[in-house]
Length: 144
Image (cartoon, rainbow, N blue to C red; front, side, top):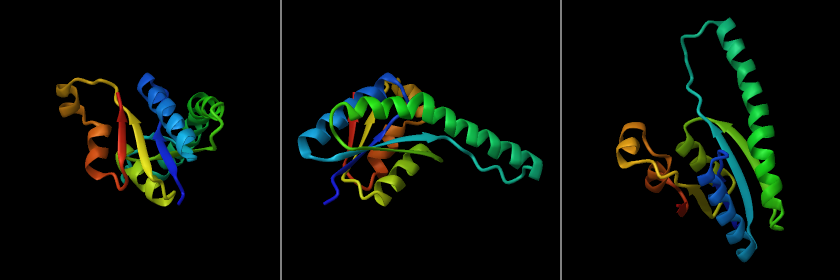
């Protein structure tokens, strides 16, 4: 069995707690960790070719910034625990993208941090954790 734990990571305090939980769990179980950073991306179909080209250039810049500022430091910190760590940066709807990655990487668990957003805020803006609980293809742990 693969025993891979996918961790949603955005650099927040909640994500840092989730990563710490996942690396501890991975170490105890002999699992590996896949740190995933998802950038929201909406596909506008009505853009001109020039606008699409500019947008793709910005996309490459965003991926490079996310790798340098968010993902690489998280990977370095997680590797201190002695577990095997991989990373991925993707564009898309966060919950759906995390689920796709969990399936494609044959993960056994998803871990995400909860940011403590009010119930009103979650109703208005949506909740990634709430969505994952409903659609996750593997067990999902929400770290407070």
